[in-house]
Amino acid sequence: MPKILLVEDNEMNRDMLSRRLERKGFEVAMAFDGRQGVEMAKSDGYDLILMDMSLPEIDGWEATRQLRAEPKTQAVPIIALTAHAMAGDRERALEAGCDDYDTKPIELPRLLAKMESLLGKTE
Image 1 (tube, rainbow, N blue to C red):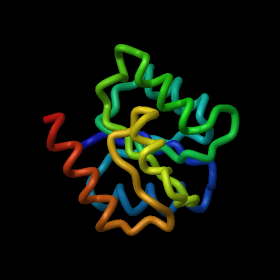
Image 2: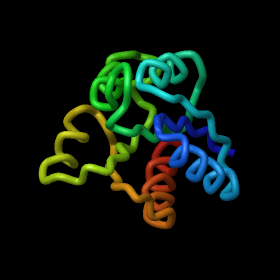
Image 3: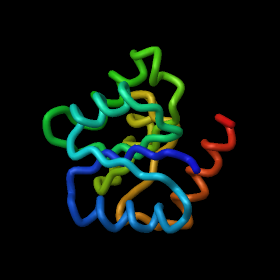
Image 4: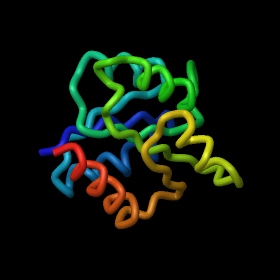
């Protein structure tokens, strides 16, 4: 069962997405801000991280850069999640170290396809 870290500050988004992923067979841990997400990713082994980009404490861009600089987490796939789909956001996410990018509201089949693609590369 793949272990996913969901870093999301919005309680409704976090609850909805975590329940949907758990029904699909994923083990989901949750962090409420960027700082907690970085700490959890460093202390526990995750197969994939879903990173909201608009987070309190430290934003998803900086959290991703910190995870990429850390030997223990630099190879863990990260998918950026953002409600602010602006031109250049995908490129900005990839430059920060994300492996892929998805927009909110989440379309589960599209997100699952991206997750499965990245998880297939790590197995």
